Length: 122
Image (cartoon, rainbow, N blue to C red; front, side):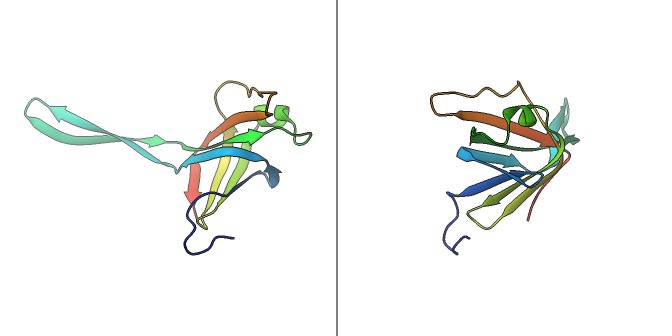
């Protein structure tokens, strides 16, 4: 897989074990919390924290299988990325977010994004 010096470039994406073609950039956000500073009239009081869902997405390439309809209806799926730097990113109990997927027929590309409560790096 990755050499000790390679940190970017290759990515593999699967959903529930089914491989999807990756035509462009992938992105992810591990599950964390969103922090907001709480200022007061007499100074900074601290911050509030709210759960922030994890996110995984990529630019893909449409082919005969799997079907785009399956991506559009994806819910409670496990999404996995294998990255060139040796990391594996795993998202559990994910769902597709945003508008339904549109495929550009000139190059058969599309963009897809998932969110869920548990995205972690391994």
